Length: 131
Image (cartoon, rainbow, N blue to C red; front, top):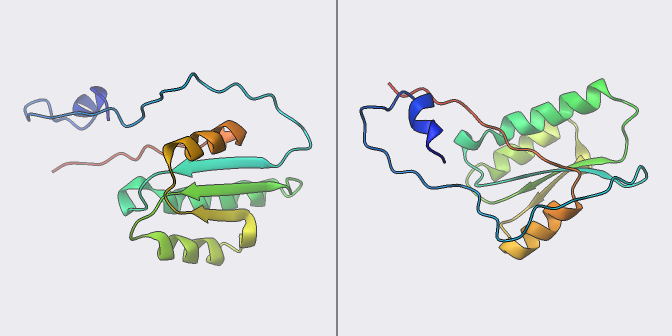
């Protein structure tokens, strides 16, 4: 993702090619918070084990459990991949009902529009140990 990954993963003696994972062609969004608006958390990416979407769903469930007064909230997971059915199952097991919304991969402009309407963009950085 960036040059720090090589150091973080102790790959200093291994040739590494890095590519930035986020490229914005628009300026950053500025959103004013409306207390009556739905609190929307967005997380986007390929639905594969390494991305940690299972942890995202469980963290969201824990957040709701610890904040029972928070009612108009949703987690929007945007992407596609082999873990989709497993992630839906986890959301069901956590009894999240319609609080978790799955959206298949969408065009970049549509994604940026959703970002602009969201309250939070959730990015989970998992640490991978290379042996």
